[in-house]
Length: 230
Length: 86
Image 1 (cartoon, rainbow over the protein chains, first blue to last red):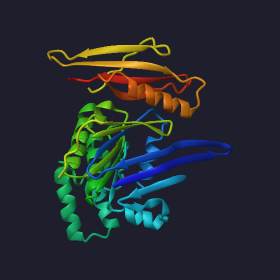
Image 2 (image 1 turned 135 degrees about the horizontal axis):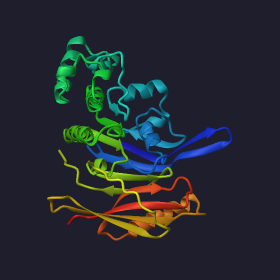
Image 3 (image 1 turned 90 degrees about the horizontal axis):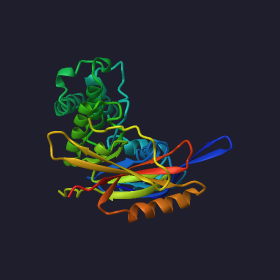
Image 4 (image 1 turned 120 degrees about the horizontal axis):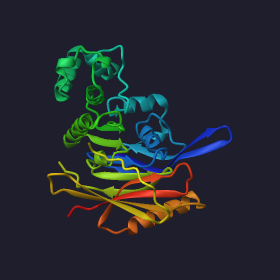
């Protein structure tokens, strides 16, 4: 599903150049659950942003589902990303002015899904994340765990093949964090590929493979458990 | 609760510290070890090469859990291992 070759990213502030990623070679198969760990500032989020096409590498190549992304322009990248990649952020990133139903419906509006289809898809996903009773609530009326469940519902409502999660339990207590990890594990079991940045060894334990980044380099890749095929 | 934070005096270069956790009313025991590697004066390519070798050659009964760097002094990298449960 994902392949990178000698992927590098540098940021420049005045005369100072910082290398966030340094010649990263990575392959992620469809259906995998991969955790990315490493000290703060080691390039985890930069890597996730490039994989999600929210950012571009400075050098190197990136293939997503066989297509070389680094050659695409912004419009082509947006078209490729839309509906195929779902994002889950540490701070949920829900829109405060929209209720639960409307937040989840948003990606379907961007994809111009018909009204009846939208209703069906949103209701299905609300059931899946056990939030149908909260459909009319606004984000501020929900707990952190509930907000993250809505954010995950929004990320998966278009049935993307890939979920990119940046510290999805970072703002949650252990009970809510465990619920979110169970939800991500369920999605993976039903076929969704998951790439998750985390500081939590307990959360990383749920993944098939753990990649340790250090100063922009892949230091180690550790296979934890076999991926179920089929 | 998934994680426990333990304050202690710190460990010098190439030393290690070990912690054993036993859950009450349970037979479960987890053993963790933090090993400190000195990186002072080395360039990043050397650090990566050294760390990779040290981690790959480390006692196979222990698995790598997390890497922490001492961002203030940039002198030591701390590597957290957990004893594999057989």
